[in-house]
Image (cartoon, rainbow, N blue to C red):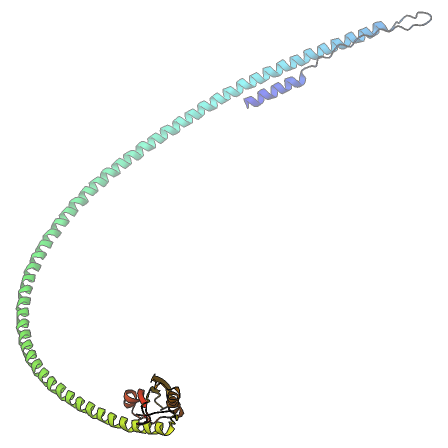
Length: 310
C-alpha cells in the first residue's frame, strides 16, 4: 500500500506540474506608406502578454501548492499506514507469542502425558515380563516332569520293543529255516519238473524237426521235379556245367527273387536256369509257417545236366 501511495503521489505531481512555455515573442511591425501612420495598438498587446504571464505564474503557484498539499497528505497517509502496520505487526507478534505459549503448554502437557504413559507401559511391561517369567518357569517345570515321564515310558516301550523284536527275530529265523527247507524242496521239485519239461520239449523239438525235415524233403522233391520239367538246357551244355542259384519265395509260394550265386561260365546255360526258375508261377511250399521260414523262405539250388536241379 505504501508503494502504491508513493507511486500515485508521484503521478499526480507529474500530472499537475506546469509546463514552462516559452514567452511569446513580441512582434513589432511598421507599415511603410507614403505617410507614416502611428500604431496605437502596440501597448494593449503588451498588456495582454503581461496578463498571460501573470496568469501562468499564478497557475504554476497554484499547482505547486496543490502538489505540496498532496505530498503532505501522502506523507501523512504513509505515516498512518506505517503506524497501522506497526500495530498490526505488534498484534501479530503478540498473537504468535500467545500461540507459541499455547503450543509450548500443549507440548509440555503431551510430554507429561507421554512420560506418564511410558512409565505406565514400562511398569506394565515389567509386570508382564515377571508374569511371563513365572509362566515360563511353571512351563519348564511341567516340561521337565513331562520329559521325565516320557523318558520312563520310552524306556519301558523300548524294553517292550526289544523283547518283541527278539521274539519276532526268533520267529523269523524259525520261519526262514522252514522257508529254506520248503524252498530247497520246491527247487528240487522245480528242477525235476524243468528237466521233465526240457526232455519233453527236446523230444517235441526233435519230433518237430524230424517232421519239418520230412515235410521239407517232400516239397523240395516237388520243387526239383517242377524245375526239371521247366528247364530246357541249351545244346551247348555239358555235364561239367553247373549253375548255382539262390531262390527267395513268399509264403504263398510265389517267387520273390532269384540270384545267380555261381555261374557255369556259359551265359546261355546260366540264363536257361534263371528262366526255368522264373517260369514257375507258384512253387509248392508247406502250410506250416515254421517249416516255410526254415527251409523255403530262402534256399539254393544247382542246375547240372547230369543231376538236373538239386
